[in-house]
Image 1 (cartoon, rainbow, N blue to C red):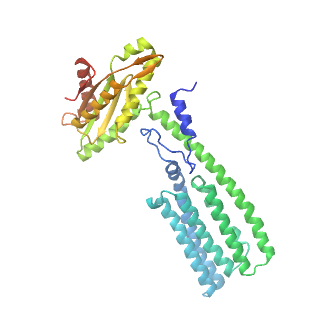
Image 2 (image 1 turned 90 degrees about the vertical axis):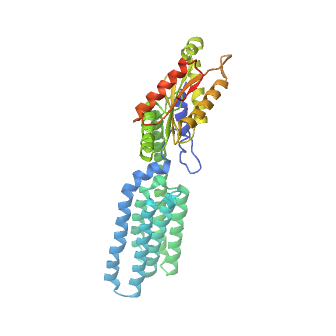
Length: 382
């Protein structure tokens, strides 16, 4: 039977929405990049130089057009088309950087790319209708499309590319290119686009699989298997970042350390499966009672830690007391038994005596044991 982590991983592997991107994180502690963010940082590094090359290619070819046509009307039309193509290629680079295009980067890339392509195809079809130029230009844009396949919608790809092909055919007919040449173009471009669509679909499928595996590995490395809270290592890494932010800004930061009372007795009486269920129940309460920006982890056994940024000890004590009450009132059913547990809580805030995170955790640990020695099921904040 799959354990809790395996179930969690399988669930997220196939949790796709309409945009075919895995939605993460479902557990708010599993901070991970979205599908687009994950692939963008890998794709754009190589894609931007390709776009810069395309811009240079467009500008340099203006000289070739001048060499053939001189300062005539065809030259000005072609030069304008080249400049427009370079502009829209530059807009693709802007899209890869700008936050304004973040939501649908793939769609913007394919729209700007094909607008650039269409400006060239229109000019050359009207001015210099050499049938071989159209396929050559299109192939360059197709190759650049493959690079960003992971970000493209198959439907958007088909609509945009086949629309451009239809426009080019109409332009050819308008300048009275003979039907034989138009037929050759159609016979060339239709299967090429279909083949490219198949490549885009295959690359995107592999990209989704790669992303799912990366997310699974992230879950495995950062979350505790049973509680689905941060494991000890990740808890301290993230807490250290929050500590540094508080130290730099001078803001408050508090720490809650809690322990399940008489946990060994629960294991001895009802078995470890029951103990696991108790730990999971307490973990769920911790997630419910803390904020998105709080760091929540299982530090080992029945001990848990919570780091609360921008929170004073007094406010943390309110949170700790609420957690304590929720745990005390919660009832756990196990094999016909109704089990209730309590927790002891130690709370502290960053001050002049806690010069690093370790000191803060140590102080929280001391106050936890003060709570235990004082009779358990209580919160100690000073």
